[in-house]
Image (cartoon, rainbow, N blue to C red; front, side, top):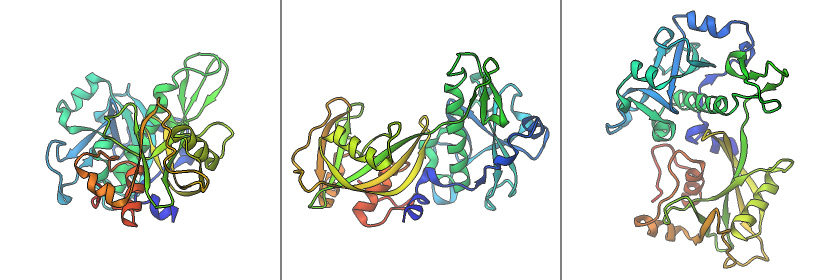
Length: 329
């Protein structure tokens, strides 16, 4: 069940062999840069370059956007680079086995490569229309690049770190400490009561008509199931039971993985005992399926790129929607 659910999530799709065994090869990035067959996913402020169509055009199934992967000679040698792996997609323009690299460009470098900003797009804006290969590639690249942005200095001694293993390790030259890419686990939970109603909350940072599932980070030394119970009580004042794992989705904004669960309101807990924490969650409401459909005119629900969208869709219809088949209001 969990794998079947996960493979339908936009950010969990992939068709790339990460080829991790070669990352420590001396001079790998240099060799990749000298190989005319290598292709580069260029990033600028978290956006990637699209081949077709421009973001401003209406997308159809016959004209889905594609990442433009450029040859290495078009990318400045000064750019931060990370080896992403080998393409596995027979449907992509690049042959199966093509080695793929991510490169981060400065404002000047990005403008020189492609000055039309409409061709640069963020992951959340286009992921539901990308192929499995492009969605996974963009997600991988963004996650590891975000890690580089926050780990330029050693967490032990504060010295500037250097990049090793084709972009997958940073080493401190002063104390020898190695720093590896990290992902922060978070739980996101679909809570139902005895009437099979769904609990949604509105975050303090959102518009007051935007609602989603409750979520929170896992604390050190804490199993995922315990995090479900703790986080839901902290944010809603409700005790839940029977957490059941659904699946997971990377969320590189900047460095999380969302672990989806369902849970039931505890038998000794009244559904009316809602107590928003007042800091993160300002409003909590129960929705029946009909309530959710009737709220289409005013309610803003999670975007199609999120695991929350798929979880709500599955509860609403009995099955998670594909990328192009959402029925949410």
